[in-house]
Amino acid sequence: MTTQGRSPLSLEPLSEAGAKEMIARLQRRNAASDAAAKAAREHQKNAKSSVSEEADVRRQLALAELMFEGGKFSKAEYFFYSLVQVERVHDTRCLAGVYDGELQPIMGAMLEIERAHGLEEDESFYLDSAPSDWLKLNRDYDAVLRAKLEDTLVEFGLLSLLHLRREDKDQFDRLRETGRLAFFSESGAEANILNLIEIYERETKCAAMAGAYFAAAMSLACAAEARIILHCIRRPDAALAAAQRLAAKVRPRNTDPLSWTVEQIVALAHAGGWLHNLPDEQLVVAVATWLENLPARGPGQQVLGGRPPGLGESEFETARDAYVMLRYSLDLAANSSQPSETLQ
Image (cartoon, rainbow, N blue to C red; front, side):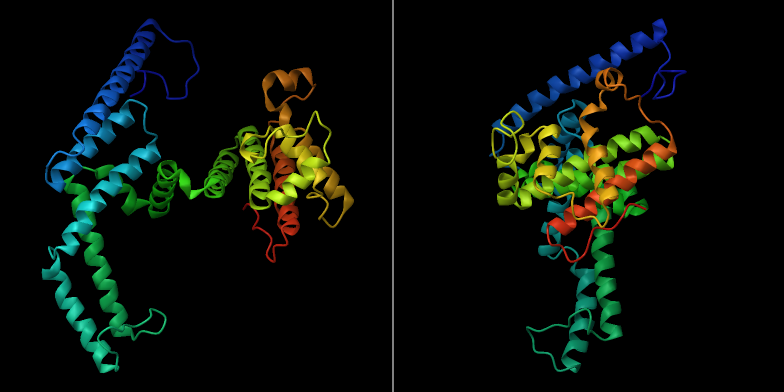
């Protein structure tokens, strides 16, 4: 819900009515947060109670809704948590033979083709070597399962997830993966950093396409930090060796790259020689200069340092070129056989 007469991003002064609506919105959010906390406690208390799987899923979905409305879940976390619950019901039904009326005829036809080609009972085709009639049946089998999953999403009221799955499968998959990483931190720092890099680069493209060049450059700055952190995570010995070359006042106090400041990260890139893999010294200087200005991104630092924010396309292009060269140099430092692709 947005304030009447104002766009979601309006920065005009609030009217009295607008201020009241904003207060009401904050109160609703606080109430939802309290309800989510209470529901979570109740859910923990009743976790071992005997209910059907479908009843438990509805309870889980109600909890997810409260957690999202109360600000306890991000959109991606709500998306993943809700989707997993519905997939649980879908998988159970599949294993229990609920869908066999539609799947068994397809499976029977596939088995006939496999026997005709001399395959044993425990053998099947690989997709890249299967005959065309078997491949068509395999696609039919997948289509039935997809339709049944979509029916289950409708059954449990997750129409927004269904719409996204149909209209933008790439975004659907991205939200699911982002949510998965949020829940399973044991996936590792590397996986989470890679996910952040993807988000930063995607936001950069969106901002640049909209003409928001300063926002695009800021996203690139975050991506650059993440790229160097990723290099340190993947090559801890090289990162620690580089740290030993730094002065004590700059050197990181611990061995966790996720806790290092941007100044320390940039200094490590210099000390490690990770910027010196470019074919021309001028390129090295260009990347180094851009990186050295990363810590001065805040408004106070920009004004005090005499660095007014660049708002034009040319400033963004400078940042973009420096970022692409940084990626290339880091790839070479990692002895990669294939440098990273550039932003389009």
